Image (cartoon, rainbow, N blue to C red):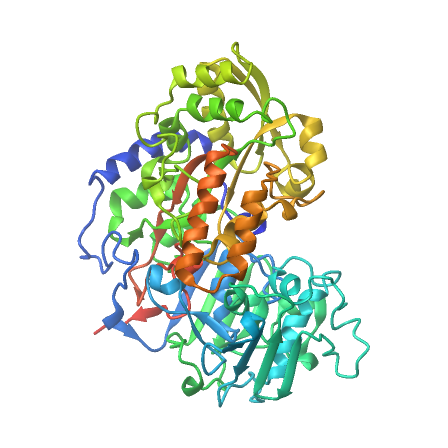
Length: 595
């Protein structure tokens, strides 16, 4: 998941970090009040990978979201924040989407606009889909295959519609021959040769070479249909034209958004969406503590961003409203990464010295403890990705014998890399992420004990792509350790790890392969993965890639991240899902019946 999708995270207060971590440790052991649902709440973790209050859901009412963060864009082509992808299913549909089920099942694909999962031919290079009957736009006109093609073509117009994922663009047109619909000289502006629309209810994709995650890509929000006569280009995010059960009534950026029922949507055409509420609203706040107080008071139902309550809010919630909380594992891994261009991190033993020298319990505490921070991370593949092994794969015993650091092993590795007396380096950390600064300070303190002197450079977090995303700048600044985090765009090692570990993804700006990994064996495994259609084999390859990355000691994982998320006592049919990295699945949330 690109850093854009993580930039919706609320700022956390450093001063409360240690206190909150202690409280959360207590809560993990059973502390905190859980009234068993007497206040109308379902109970602690009642919606974590299972459905809470499904039998109580009613039709009608207003579902109220609160957030300190507006979307990067509500345009289906441009949106990249995780909560935008989740929320956009209210007003956009795709050929395929994710199942409305909790946990791992929710990450499985199911037909949406398409009648089935498609027909695959030509060794995985041709995909044909047929559209359902009765699918309509908000004005009642039918959604056609040409609308889907046009919506996908918009991803090529990066000069006008920058910001969204470009998987389909890269897979369908790897040479960049097509220039996008706004520069398309064909009369219908549907000149992308890789997609055919032989009739209004058939769409055919022609891939130059197979990609085993192609179905995941056509399920992305960026594959939503867009009707040409309603395309306002760069302004489209202010009022997208609906293909789903709800439509935009009003939107004031950074202040509020209101959706109301799309009366031309037909439930019979949509096997996914139940459309329980009559109205769905978002109120945007400027202060996380203010927002959490309003959530606790029952004025709003849940936090749109789904990245955990503020330290102050969760302290109160764990003490007095524990039955309204869920503690899901997110799809994110938080970590330090070692650019090989900065000496002495071109030496694997110097990298291992940092891994062994770090106090992993202290790092976990800096991130909020075992509940708000997450389990100690032992490798680089998040639990939601097939092939992940969680803490079972712990090659450096990070969660075991070495969880508080191992000075002896660290000094052995320093000797092996020719730095027996240690060395100096710089830790780069975003200045708008206080929890990351706290993590950097924890790492700095533990490394000093083994002779590694690290200064901390807090850079402008809004300029990530040009600062740590520039390999030349990283080398110039001497950033030997970079604090970062990542989550999958879709649940596969391609949707998570390829931008981080494949050498072809090393860029001069906007780079995410910070370690500058150029390992032919890893590249070959990715090549094998994208051409393998057998799911069991894909899972095996995913595990192998993770092992290769771990053996290279390119990363020091901190946590398999967890959140403390709020759900109001009014909510029904609520559950977390792996498809959105442990968030609640918004699309079929409803309000409780008073009966």
